[in-house]
Image 1 (cartoon, rainbow, N blue to C red):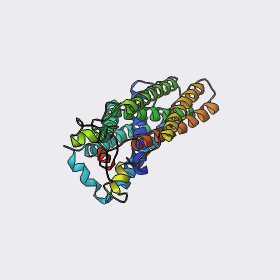
Image 2 (cartoon, rainbow, N blue to C red):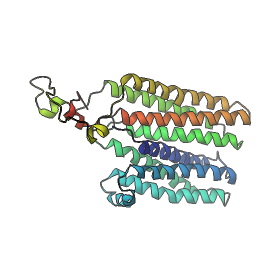
Image 3 (cartoon, one colour):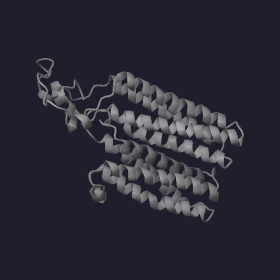
Image 4 (cartoon, one colour):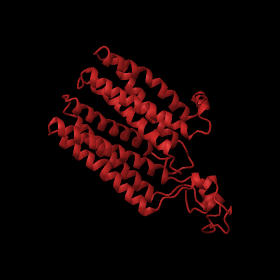
Length: 312
């Protein structure tokens, strides 16, 4: 599938924002984060800003962005519509939670719980937009939803750690949280890529034509003399060697190095810890963006069988 920049930024930014908001709420409920106005202003500003920027970016993929509101009316049948409704609904408790924290210097337990629930539900809805598409084998599998959830929380934890160290707060478990989520994310991605490499989609030229019992089916002539929209959007291909390099980049720069930097920051002074956590957050977020690019680039729609693909 063609990796659109607007959708890559949307899924990466909104996932990070919801992960950060959920971790802020969870940390407050567990008593690990006190209601510091300055910290709260930066943390909620970053979290809500990422969510808002991601949602606005998603409009860039629409032919008529001014009609985006119509998508909210189809929540009974569309995961895209459910994601939009959940995203808007989550803003309400998140803003209440932020208001209590920043303006009142207190924690609203009810708003915190609703923020966590809303962030998780919205992220699942975002993942289900792709996991519900039967024609795309790379998305319609049990790996997609857990990956979206864990990577969103992982990226959110990286930025939470940066803010904790920058404001010199006492939250010793934040580095361990980053490490655990990073290890879980890398394990999920390795498992997903292994599934993608060895797994075969249900649809092949043989199953599509019903001639599989006779032998292997191949195209005699191309269906078109020139490339068209379907080939560009649904049949985007990335070379295997480039894919392997990008996967390694995600595992090393997106997970390995940020985890190491976060653990080192936990045993360093405020200045070095802030710098290392900033570098970890930037590298980890870049890794998530590259991972999301691969998520789209390595996927094929079954329509590509019509153009001579061996499988989709």
